[in-house]
Image (cartoon, rainbow, N blue to C red; front, side, top):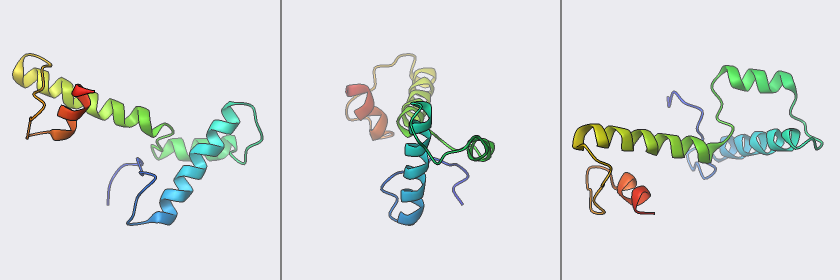
Length: 96
């Protein structure tokens, strides 16, 4: 349906999926830190193969950055007005 693996932690449509994804990300981080984790290399590979997003914050940052690139291509600059109604999320992000 969504064609991506960027499941938000507050996904109200399927909260059990949101919890499961959050747990996978937590277990992955523990493994990277050398701590005990249920995340195996096999599971990592399986999730990687379907495009699982390990770092949702970075993925969202990249998404908005791509929107900024599109804005610059259209407008010739990165000066997004704070009241830019075509993309309020981009306007808010640039303002921060």
